[in-house]
Length: 351
Image (cartoon, rainbow, N blue to C red; front, side):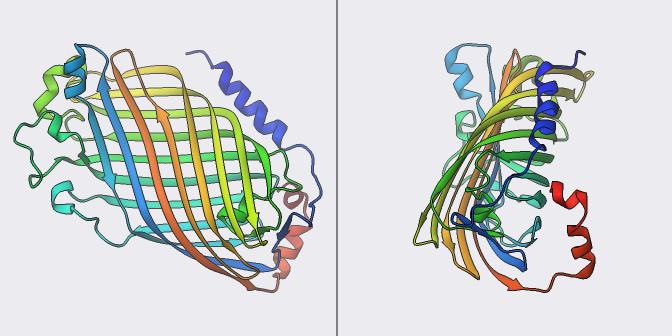
């Protein structure tokens, strides 16, 4: 397999982004160097969606066999800690969603961390869902009504490990972190172009097949398709902006998109696996609305990212939608001596 040119660009971009430093414009944002930021969040929307459709057959048949698998993990509680250029967040399932009897149970866990200042930031995380239901059950199950259960695939699991690198061209005036980790505070409205790269591993699996038994005959060689491993690398760009009112109220909107090289491994219940390489697109949209005071802050935010795993016979779109309400406080702390020594190193200056 040839090494894709788009991936070469990914590594060149990361190397280029680490070069150079700029001075902060204190008229536009403030950084809290001596504060430990503690925030609690409640996920009000958290859904992993896998949309599957066939490309062959007549239009009516394709519409009636479309799948929309959802893992419903609303009301997830979590905590985030941030200090200087580091942050870590952990979430866990707290309350079962409405309609759990009809939709089945979803088991969920997530962990994320980030490092970097206002110029660039590296985010990493792990997320896992187990237990999906098909929102399109009525398309092919004639007995389905408002009280019967959706088609459920309790063994269906998705998990992903992802790293995202963000570089902000207007980092001397614009603070992305002021809207999401609140280790910074934007004082004046400002915007920036964003360069982004992603590297991730994603796995989708189930026991027998992703395709419900009602419609397996319509999916041909994919009738017993039960696994997909993907290594993806992408590079692209977009923009992010903060609208600030009274130095405290803010609205952030961020959109990035790029080309993505994907190495895929398809597995089947009763036939050999197949390895393939594709060039696709991916992107994410984020928005945050909130209050960011000198010590206390609260934020209502949303994130929606998507990737396509289409082949010559089926279409697959993986999308993640989340909505959070978080509130937190900046505690003034004395910088530990060991951390002061770290701040004097070349590694810290690069961060």
